[in-house]
Length: 75
Image (tube, rainbow, N blue to C red; front, side, top):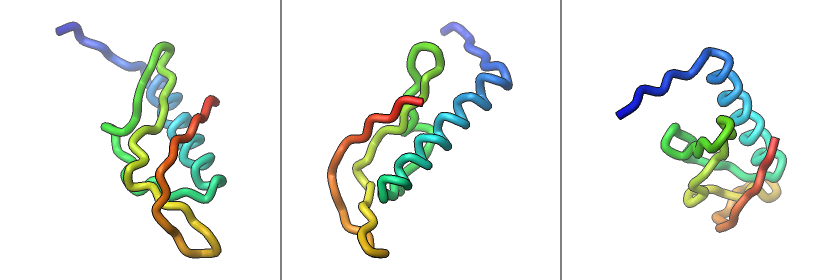
Protein backbone atom coordinates (compact mmCIF):
# COMPACT_ATOMS: atom_id res chain seq x y z
CA UNK A 1 0.00 0.00 0.00
CA UNK A 2 1.47 3.35 -0.97
CA UNK A 3 1.40 6.23 1.47
CA UNK A 4 -0.48 9.38 0.53
CA UNK A 5 0.20 12.53 2.52
CA UNK A 6 -1.87 15.68 2.08
CA UNK A 7 -0.37 19.13 2.46
CA UNK A 8 -2.06 21.51 4.87
CA UNK A 9 -3.24 23.67 1.96
CA UNK A 10 -4.83 20.60 0.32
CA UNK A 11 -6.73 19.82 3.54
CA UNK A 12 -7.96 23.41 3.78
CA UNK A 13 -9.09 23.23 0.14
CA UNK A 14 -11.05 20.04 0.82
CA UNK A 15 -12.65 21.51 3.94
CA UNK A 16 -13.58 24.66 2.01
CA UNK A 17 -15.20 22.61 -0.75
CA UNK A 18 -17.25 20.63 1.77
CA UNK A 19 -18.31 23.84 3.54
CA UNK A 20 -19.31 25.42 0.20
CA UNK A 21 -21.26 22.29 -0.71
CA UNK A 22 -23.09 22.31 2.62
CA UNK A 23 -23.90 26.01 2.18
CA UNK A 24 -25.33 25.19 -1.26
CA UNK A 25 -27.44 22.37 0.20
CA UNK A 26 -28.75 24.78 2.85
CA UNK A 27 -29.64 27.38 0.20
CA UNK A 28 -31.66 24.64 -1.54
CA UNK A 29 -33.51 24.12 1.78
CA UNK A 30 -32.14 20.65 2.49
CA UNK A 31 -30.60 19.17 5.63
CA UNK A 32 -28.03 16.42 4.92
CA UNK A 33 -28.18 14.82 8.41
CA UNK A 34 -25.26 12.42 7.85
CA UNK A 35 -22.17 14.46 6.99
CA UNK A 36 -19.05 12.45 7.82
CA UNK A 37 -15.79 11.55 6.14
CA UNK A 38 -17.23 8.35 4.65
CA UNK A 39 -19.77 10.48 2.75
CA UNK A 40 -17.20 12.74 1.09
CA UNK A 41 -16.03 11.56 -2.32
CA UNK A 42 -12.59 12.77 -3.38
CA UNK A 43 -11.76 12.72 -7.09
CA UNK A 44 -8.92 13.75 -9.35
CA UNK A 45 -7.37 17.06 -8.39
CA UNK A 46 -8.75 16.64 -4.85
CA UNK A 47 -12.25 17.68 -5.96
CA UNK A 48 -14.57 16.85 -3.05
CA UNK A 49 -18.24 15.96 -3.41
CA UNK A 50 -20.82 15.35 -0.71
CA UNK A 51 -22.57 11.99 -1.10
CA UNK A 52 -25.24 9.80 0.53
CA UNK A 53 -28.43 11.83 0.72
CA UNK A 54 -30.37 8.87 2.11
CA UNK A 55 -31.16 10.77 5.33
CA UNK A 56 -31.61 14.18 3.69
CA UNK A 57 -34.67 16.24 4.53
CA UNK A 58 -36.30 19.12 2.68
CA UNK A 59 -37.23 22.19 4.72
CA UNK A 60 -40.60 23.67 3.74
CA UNK A 61 -42.14 26.50 5.76
CA UNK A 62 -40.02 25.78 8.85
CA UNK A 63 -40.87 22.06 8.72
CA UNK A 64 -38.80 19.39 7.06
CA UNK A 65 -39.98 16.35 5.14
CA UNK A 66 -38.22 13.37 3.60
CA UNK A 67 -37.38 13.65 -0.09
CA UNK A 68 -35.16 11.53 -2.26
CA UNK A 69 -32.95 13.25 -4.79
CA UNK A 70 -29.51 14.05 -6.09
CA UNK A 71 -27.50 17.26 -6.05
CA UNK A 72 -24.77 18.35 -8.38
CA UNK A 73 -22.41 21.02 -7.09
CA UNK A 74 -19.23 22.16 -8.79
CA UNK A 75 -17.16 24.89 -7.10
